[in-house]
Length: 345
Image (tube, rainbow, N blue to C red):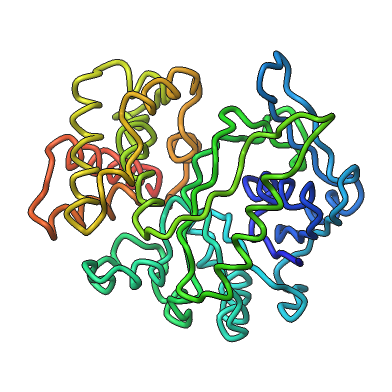
């Protein structure tokens, strides 16, 4: 299988899993990063179960072949599956927007690893009026050309980051949990995704199981379980004038965290999800103990970004649509609004 992955940072984790399973992956990124990856490959550092140190998994050692390309040079006819692994604001960049239109026109199945679900995916959920959510997106028009049946969403639960002291072809995995994807609207595309998941499941390294699996679910709501985590941890990392680690966002006011987490879960259930689709708060809170850095959205804001993924605003809008609003969520949306406005000058 030939897999096109838009995004060479977080996308390199998914790409490495594909390479280890014997599939080929092409990472779409800026030209200098593409040249580096072509020359040196990628390195993903991940900790295997019961091992104290991270392993360095290099792309050149895997059975699948890795390539990299700037968006202008991609021939979409070469690929079977597209993985969307960039931050939502990046899809409005001219070169990426043009590539997305080619992908949509080709009818290629797209698996989104974005925290912010593509609007085309939300159109698959009958209880959601996707047209009323445009204000949460940087460029909502980029998703109009997609057939919703060809777009699915994956809850990107693994936590990973580029070490600032390393080259941009290195990724460190801090929390090696699983990718949880919903099925496609198309049976053929779902079968391909399930085959990829099975191949990843069977990978071994020195006879040992390798964490970070791909799980495929029938429910469209399983990937939305990430929303509770994002609004409880990631977006509450943003404070007025500063940021804090995810661990502190979750554990500094445990009762408030529990309430926010449950409230977002209630919104998903009101939209049609099942309680069984959600991750228990206790499991998330335990995992958050090891998340010692601010979230990527908080780091971006702290670094001066003027546009970030607004899952907080999306969930707040959906909550209002089903008469479920929460003061902490509303307050945090305002904090992020103010921070982005300050960065914009």
